[in-house]
Length: 195
Image 1 (cartoon, rainbow, N blue to C red):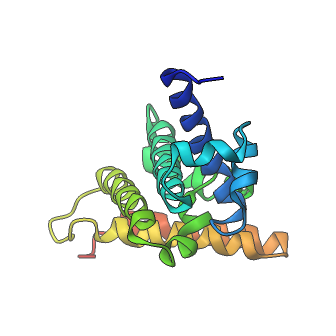
Image 2: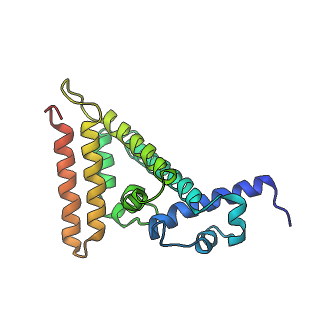
Image 3: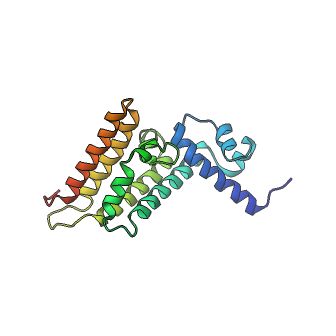
């Protein structure tokens, strides 16, 4: 039975969505094509009609994950009297720490992506730049600050804190990592030094 173009595109988007979650949960190399396609409700045979390779799917799924992450930050900030605090509170929370398949792709796949091709790394680069732009726009400006300098420090601190807190087996220590990072992010954001 032939599939219409519209259905084929819907299937492709379903695979990208499923892979976006499954890669964050299992890593790029921790899940095979059969299980990726099963996660989208399709058979493995349909894969090569939609994607050139697993790396092609990884790149598309990474782009989707980074776009969703950026959108979550924008949503958290929207309409909030202190948008930066809203992002920090959301991102450095126990709830976000536990979101393995829907959480931050940088924390879930950053070290994995660094070992992959440029095709897979480009969506991360673009997503990082989008995150930095959001952070930079939300921080108080000072004449001596360098563009993105504080944003880079804050993003690095937040992603590192979530990553480390996920590794911890001691719940109290894991929570302390998130809280210490949140305190430091606030300090960096409010500092008027030429950072």
